[in-house]
Image (cartoon, helix red, strand yellow):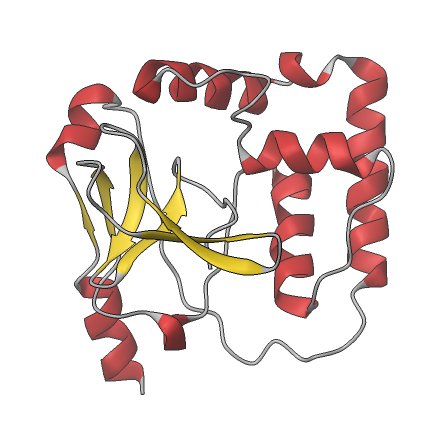
Length: 180
């Protein structure tokens, strides 16, 4: 299994256009196995407390890591800050009223995002078709989303940053969207 994971991670690609636009961009892909399906309440409560403390000191958009992601989003694809939020900003804002409890994996990376002030996401590698690639969309890539409990196929706008595999878009705008 280790060889297969090394092969999978070794096949991941980031398009050169990404670095032309954001020379400071860094990505780390890792595989985590064996996360027990146990309660994650303690992790999430700690993350909620950290987010609330941060928000007492400054407005969410003034938190340095969130501000940096906002700048990158606007430069990369003209994101609208009130509409296109990175996952860290989304989680910090949501933490005030309580984070959603999803499952142990999602809860773990959501808590780690807040604790370490980085945007983390997770995917089910069993659902991947080919290698992950971070590209600028041509506008032709398939993007399956859920709308009103039905699967809908859309296409990301030209130039948007997307994670993509052989079957289509897996993540939009560098980070999690409602992609299935």
